[in-house]
Amino acid sequence: MAGIVVVFDFDKTIIDCDSDNFVVDDLGFTDLFNQLLPTMPWNTLMDRMMMELHSNEKTIEDIVEVLQKIPIHPRVIPAIKSAHALGCDLRVVSDANMFFIETILKHLRIRECFSEINSNPGYVDEEGKLRILPYHDFTKCPHGCSLCPPNMCKGLIIDRIQNSISPEENKRFIYLGDGAGDYCPSLRFKEKDFVMPRKNFPVWDLICKDPLLVKAEIHEWSDGEDLERVLLQLINKISMDGSAQLISNDCKLQNLPVSAHVPQVLRV
Image (cartoon, rainbow, N blue to C red; front, side, top):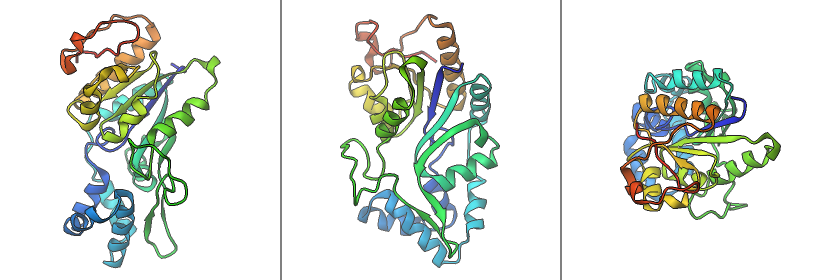
């Protein structure tokens, strides 16, 4: 399946929670986080929270210990390993941060399955404090996308990935996500590609407002079991290049005219 690129969001897609909230809550800083949340962008707030953790004598080892307890559906790791074993090019595009993602994927022993991770920079400074920076430096060069938070436009990241692949390679994409930030990249894919929004999550709601804006086929999933089944079905579908498609009753897509340009949803 060398012709397939599978792009995963991370929070609430690979793992079954928001890693930022999980760390803050587990270490006992939820009240401060909620107090500061209205005053600054989320990414900036997480950098501030890491400073607060450090000033309260929480160490990098404490943070790593929390990250190693992160919840994940038992079928997600087998799904990732299967897609990788089938030769798919797996990548992560996430508004979490590199330190959290790398730590979790290494702990789960699936880091080697991914060829690329795109996320907000996260590193430990000389004082032993975790710093989290924006992917796009919005203070110097705003990305200009009204759909995305100031620190990261996932659509621009998808553009870069797509532009790095020559047309002769004829790669087909499968994109999995749950959040509002996954809507912009969902609009970047072509009719031959697939978008897997998590059902009843923000990206699903946004897509349902006007499914025709998404050119790729839409295939929903609800939990890790669904994720595994639908992802492997799509990989097989691409390899077969012509298997039957089923229309879901959700999003009122059944009322749309079915054509080569209308996104379709797999009933799972």
